[in-house]
View 1 (spheres, rainbow, N blue to C red):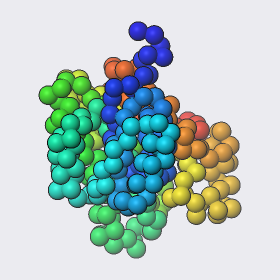
View 2: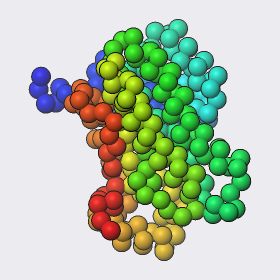
View 3: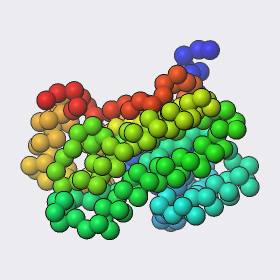
View 4: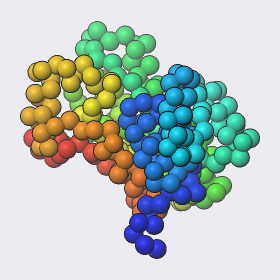
Length: 256
């Protein structure tokens, strides 16, 4: 097999949660350009349709799956619909997530649960549905999206930090149980990326200066810079890589 062939996703279908914009859309596009058919997911049907139309116009095969990743019944129903349509998910990217910035002493339990459910529990629920179908086939790729906070905490984002730390361990738990069935479960830990979710931080001069000063690359990351890691972890090139988290952070975690 040639080296380029190791990264060829032709004949595979990838479900990317939260893929109507931001990091999810960038990774979905990258997977499609590597040859994968896509199942796009989001809760805003209009925005999802717009993203799907743009990718179809570029010549990619795209299916739409508008469901809420925090709704267990909706997740099960979405996979049942894919089954009925003969669409097998070979690659799952658990990307959907939200952020909430608030000091712990001011944090409501309901908000804590909302962040944990969206960023961590959803990866378990969607991952479980995917694995139930991958295990009988003896193959599958699961890519969970972690964060710098999978390895280090930051003030005012406690539930996000706990969820992303949990993503690291969920990835290892998936490996412990599913690697024997030919499933590779790994994660990507993005650094500070230029996304809509981070726009307020980019526009804050003090925070922007901190990110640039703290990051050896001296800049924010771009969403498309996650594509290489996503394609690697979705492809045959990573068939003996399991339970790992790849940080795409401009070197931030490498220095004090």
